Image 1 (spheres, one colour):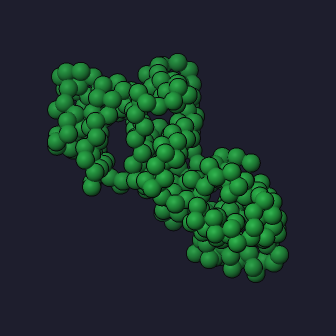
Image 2: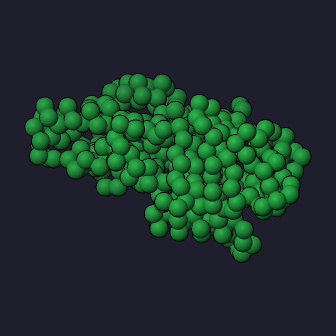
Length: 315
C-alpha cells in the first residue's frame, strides 16, 4: 500500500495553478497574505528573494521550488530588503492576461515565478500530510534529483506554451511536483532527524513501523489490535507500541481511528451511502460507535458533517 498516495487520495488533494508573476530587474516586491491552504512557487526564470517572518531572506534561483505547507504569509521581491506591495493591489494595477501572467514591468533581467496552491477536503491545520511538515520547504534546483528537475522543467515549459491543453497538463504536473518535493524533504530530513517534526511521514522510512502503517491503510476496516499489528511486523507488543508512538506521534489505535474517519469523511462527501453502512465499511461495529468516533475527530456527527459539505459556501 502506498500510504502517502492513499492519504492524498482520501483527502481529495489536488494542485491548482494561480498565476505567474513576471518582472524585470530588482525594483519590485509582492506581498502574499496567509492562504487557507498550502501554496508553492517555482522559479522558472531569473532570481528573486523569499521573505517569511522569523526567517532570514532566502535567494531563489531558476529551478528552485518553495512549498509553504501551512500557507504562511510571505513576500517575493527583487531584492532581500525590497518593499513589497500586497498582491491584490499589484493585480489590480497589472491585470493578469489570458494566460494568467501578472506582468509587473520594470527594467533589467526577467524574473518569472509560477505560483499555485493545493486544495483538499477538511481543516487545513489537520491535514495529515501538511500538518506534518515545517512552515517552509525549499528545494534548490541545483541539488534536486533528476526526476524532480524534469517535472520542474516541464511545468515551467507548459506554463509558457500556448499548445492545446497546456494548462490542464500544468495542473496535473503540480500534483506530481508536490510528491517529488515531499520525497526530497524526506531525504533531507532523514540525514538530520532532529530537524524534522515527529510524524507518520518520517515513520514511513522505518521498515517495521512503515509496514504497520501500510497494513492499516490497506485494510482500515479490519479489527486491528496492537498485538496483531505487532505480530504482523515481527515485534513484541511493548516494543511496537513504544516505537510507533515515538515515530508517529500517536498510538497505533489512535492512528487507526484517524485513517478510518478520514475515509468515512470522503464517503460522506462523495457518496449517498447510509451513515450506518459507511460506519460498517470503515470498521465500526455500530452506528453509535462510529458517530462518537467521528464527532471526536471532526467535531461534528457524521450526518451533520454530510449536510455541511452539501451546503453551498455563503449560505
